[in-house]
Length: 80
Image (cartoon, rainbow, N blue to C red):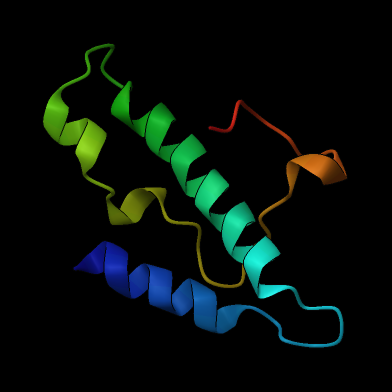
């Protein structure tokens, strides 16, 4: 539930001015969550099924924070 609320807060914090691309913004957000989740899931060096299938609030970017797109040079990992 905390993760869901944090996602909603993040999406609501996106500026919607000229040039806003919702699809692009959501794809960048999704990629960042996947990247953070991968790091979080392997934090102990062990991976279990629950960790792989559960997104927690701690991997969701803070509302108002910038999420960089791979094409902008902000690529920090491999995106699936």
